[in-house]
Length: 164
Image (cartoon, rainbow, N blue to C red):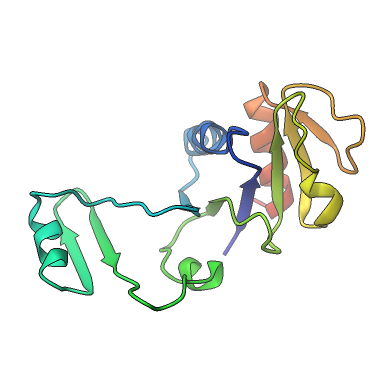
């Protein structure tokens, strides 16, 4: 399975970059999946929906399916959060998985930074960072820097890195 990540600190623009890159890669005919890490409680289900009522009644897993899509919701309870490796086992047959977050995992990734950020460089601490994407110069960068505005170049970099 070909995987590549996009990591950065809060409000660096990770999700916006993932959306732009996925749009670019799928526009080139690739089948792309994403895995996103959330640092907070989130819910894809909402009160009043049947699946929400199933969970509220105590179901530890709920699958919702239609002719357009399906979703599998798993309540962890007191189980620990699944690892990236476990989550990747859930992904079907795709050309590439883009991973948002998981900055401390060892998969190859881009670091996204905004100009003027005072956050420490992830690339300085993790060899898994292959390049930095930024809207400005990063003079202390230990890896190449790609212009954030050049989504095509970012997609080209990822494709080259994973061997597609």
